[in-house]
Image (tube, rainbow, N blue to C red; front, side, top):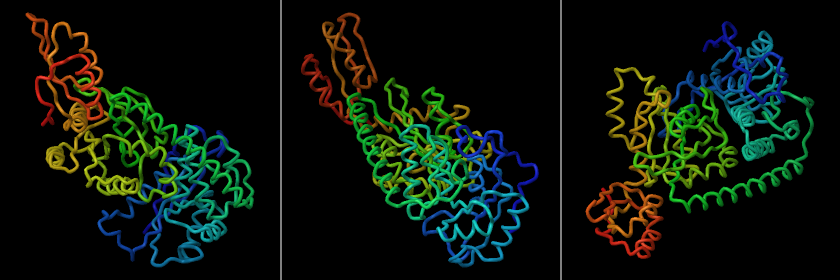
Amino acid sequence: MKPRDRSQGHQPAREPAGREGLRATHAPPTRAIVILPERRDHADEAGAAPRTGEAKLAEAVSLAEAIGLDVAQALIVPLRRLVPATLIGAGKVEEIAGIARIHDVEVVIVDYPVSPVQQRNLEKAWSAKVLDRTGLILEIFGERAQTREGRLQVELAHLNYQKSRLVRSWTHLERQRGGFGFLGGPGETQIEADRRQIQARIYKIEGDLERVRKMRAGHRAERKRVPRPIVALVGYTNAGKSTLFNRLTGSKILAKDMLFATLDPTLRRVRLPHGEEAILSDTVGFISDLPTTLVAAFRATLEEVLEADLILHVRDIASAETLEQAADVTEVLAELGINPGEGRRIVEVWNKIDLVPSAQREALGHRAESAEPRAVLVSAESGEGLPALLAAIEEALTGGRPTVTVELGADQLGAAPWLYRNTEVLERNDDPETGSARLKVRVAEKRLAPFREWAQREHVAVAAEMRKSA
């Protein structure tokens, strides 16, 4: 395939904040080449949606640009057989070496697993740093992490990745922010790392993250004392989760058209149509071939998803890759033990409908109505469809709750505020002649026992048997 030349008219990606450790702020962006070795003799896994090489290459370029690399050229390299020493054939190695010299390239991104031996040989042949897909994603995560917890999780993933590759640079341990030393910075010389030192650091981080996990568990226990359900946003990176989060909660967290704009989890309250509040959690975006080291390292964060009462799977419905992206998200959820086919409450949010041609809107609406899990069409950017989404969230959270009708005499109205704080008041009818009130409320399962205790304590008459609402 003819390489895609990006050297003319290409606007370098804006230099992200926090990259001081990678390059001087006045220096030009690092030049890079992106190559996609494509195995033509291997079909995609059974059941997986096929992806075109062009789509995979475009995503790899986006990943490179996400850390400010200036991609001079991107090309697909047909891979008929794996070469143990260099992954790709000698002819292609030499061709890419020539491209690297022409464009003064410092980094070559290989969107494929590269062994330590292959990495060393390719770096020697190309006189440039070589990053495979896992290394590139780790670099992005290292830059995006803002909290101490996020940085610990990324460093743990990085160390586990590098442990098997005989680490040659310890610059990432000297840095307080930014990536993890692949692209340069202080300490450029190669240093042989001591495995015992790496393992000691891993044990230290694992201990710190275990304390984080216990702290999060404590926070979740505190939240369970207040009857607010947890709703977790998940989805492919850049599907619009953070924009949707901001729309629903009125927050101003970072929401940009870039991969992995959000890394650290954020929790905010959101008000549902009938007045009840839920806790909305924004999480890290998923991606195809997400390194298993990252899934393991971020488990403390992703426990928010495991503990959620409802999961919103946000999809970029305007993307040509929407089905493939959805399959990737489902795969990661399965790794966490969440299977949509086993009764887990999931609502699909088909986002970016403002980018869908009007001629396709009606057919898309029909598909959403019959989708399983249920689906809601929205535009987080314009706000279109958000009332329907809030209604769907409320129905998913409360549709199976028992509904109770209670009678409050005139001398019992002082007990009514408890109902507003601890149940969902659906209807209230006051009798002006007697001063009494009749309230129809929906009670969360975890509030049933407190409700019974309240009714007994206040001598409240339950006018109807507790039953499941339709």
